[in-house]
Length: 146
Image 1: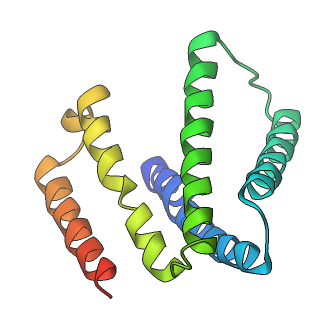
Image 2: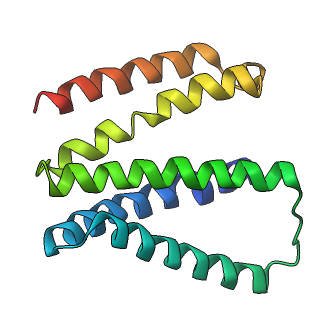
């Protein structure tokens, strides 16, 4: 396997499976009765513990203001999104089977921003990317109407 293929498996396929399971844990946790604040706190503690374990085994402990602020931005935006999903699950009893495909339309936001901010348009096959994006949009429409 090429390094690029391994990277796609490690950074794409495995996280997709884990995010799929995380949706099940989100639904089960919120159905079992948990407040959004406590829910986010427990998630944060879990992530902090995993970060601590990773830091023990990772020999690269690089950090600077810019990288730290970007990581903080990731945590804040991800935390707000996770909290909103929890509210949709508990207050509005939205089915996770509809929510997950909709909130994963974030892929389209990431595609547009990566093409623009990081100039990835010259690293990917843009026509294929746009066609795949169109399929994602069509899928999102079908899921929203299910």
